[in-house]
Length: 209
Picture (cartoon, rainbow, N blue to C red):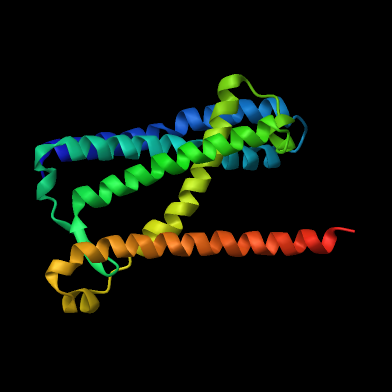
């Protein structure tokens, strides 16, 4: 492995560990200001749970930054191809798509969550005593969880690899198969969202007088 890539990987690992410090510090401030009482075990549990929420966007930022730096290294084209469901593609394409997808999901999630808070539809957030930057970290944490779920559906599906199936495909079609894999993954995501929306609609219809 290229020395520059090793260096970036090492710095990323150390940074991911160190990111737990600000995450726990921010979550600790929020817990102390909003959950007074004698239930110390509950406070510690919430401290770690909220810390994990805040840690998510910090880790994503560091990973995305590491990915960008790795892609900028000239030797990154030596990483070979990534085999996915129905095809394969160069490492640069795979990493770039994941990066673009993550940024897009974060952007849309932050816009929507902030809009809901402004409209008063998330009272559990509005009821908290938060400074402006603590509020931003909470929003980023929620966006990070949305990104984790989208990645869990899309990227994990695309990453399914059947060697025997890929071996039977024409090598000239493997790059097309790579894009078809992403298309199928997004269709699955849309179907999941559609089914959930239908379930919620039926529930509201039953509850309505």
